[in-house]
Length: 474
Image (cartoon, rainbow, N blue to C red; front, side):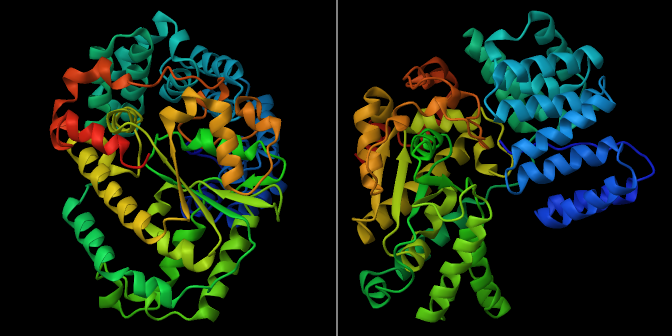
């Protein structure tokens, strides 16, 4: 779950705000910070600029402490502004301060009862503690189509979370479905299948062998890959608790490297969906790309040169050959979970940017496509990829944690046994869950929703095939 949006109010600095918002949308966080710092030099009490600067620090280097300072200043200037209060609530949610998140969200709705973002934070922080009056208000707002998809999509998802916490799975699924129907974007199964077919044809053992030994060794790169909602944040947190590691979170640094190779191709080749960009590389280009990746990720970590740097962009499973080229000694941890649990969890998250997650049939297709990639990579890179099954990790946590720490080449540290105590910013949909001691209560969650999941079950091939898929990488 990324940092939220912040709607600026009209005012004398409107142009600067618009420029800063464009920079934020383009992920040009340095430019956004420069624009907003200049705006605040002219007008230190510009609360919108303070909030936007907090977001630039939040989304860019992940500097939550400085972001909190700017938000506190904005809240002091406008203590009853629901937008600022809900932004504070979201910040505390990501910091793991869940009670504070609830308090700020409750203050926001006290100031503005129809402010939907605050209800969304409540449902993410403590869904079981949402007051019945607040749930009633959420449902009333959810029945107002004039609010538009931007407000209604997360609101219906939030209502679903509250009903889920109450054990009312029929009502929960109804609102998850209403939320997903409001999602933008289209999923293209045929394009996904064609690219996987191209990967199978292009990446052969011989082609892999010819480029062996390129790249940089000794960089200590650890990549966590897999499906969303597969237990990856737990794996990241237990490793990040180790004093010799740091995490660059869900960075785009790897995909940006591949994008730069694609841009170097003629237009038609770049759009082909193939892998021709891997043909026009040599050892020098690979080394430059590896160093560019290390420089980019160093800017996103507290420690520029940790012994192990953790990259938790799960979609990097698409770029396994690039990982192996850039960093031949990298460790890749593949997190996986029961297909029905992982797909249900995706469906109930309200993910934007992952268009397959809003439809049960598309979820099944994406899951089978992802399994196809992992099957291919496991055959080509059998000693690089280590499989971490969520159910095994939560059932026998410390022995499994020791195995994972050892797999990345580190000695055991006791902090890794209690990842929920780590005082770290979590920029994922698991921001609240990872603050709890490790437990297995989310296993077989799908059973409460089974009657609603039949299209997913059928599209995955039925229960026997689903259990086979679940055991494939154990």
